[in-house]
Image 1: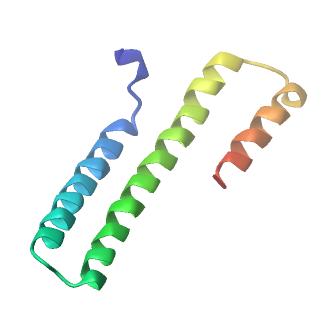
Image 2 (image 1 turned 90 degrees about the vertical axis):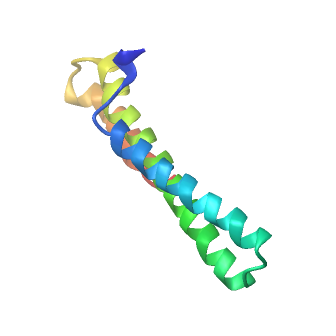
Image 3 (image 1 turned 60 degrees about the vertical axis):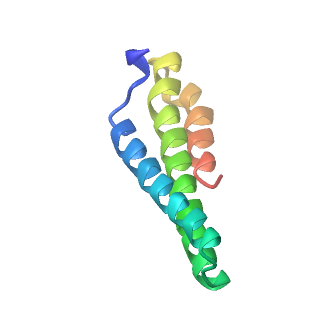
Amino acid sequence: MSDHIHASHPAIAKRLKRAGGHLAKVVAMIEGGSPCFDIATQLQAVESAIVQAKRTLIQDHLDHCLDHVVGDVSPERRQPIDDFKAIAKFL
């Protein structure tokens, strides 16, 4: 499986570990009766970290794996792929 490890993966793993720490804090805050606003703030941090990790992983996949499968093609034939990669950034 090492062929599926990309340069971005260590940063993604670090981000997700940080999100895991935030999530553990949220659980402790709920169990400890912290104010809802404080809990919601921490949940937002968890959600943001996970969303960013997912986006980075998907963009990395598109940039590397899709290009690998397509290989060298003329700019005209490549245009739909480049368009797809560009629009996928909005997901």
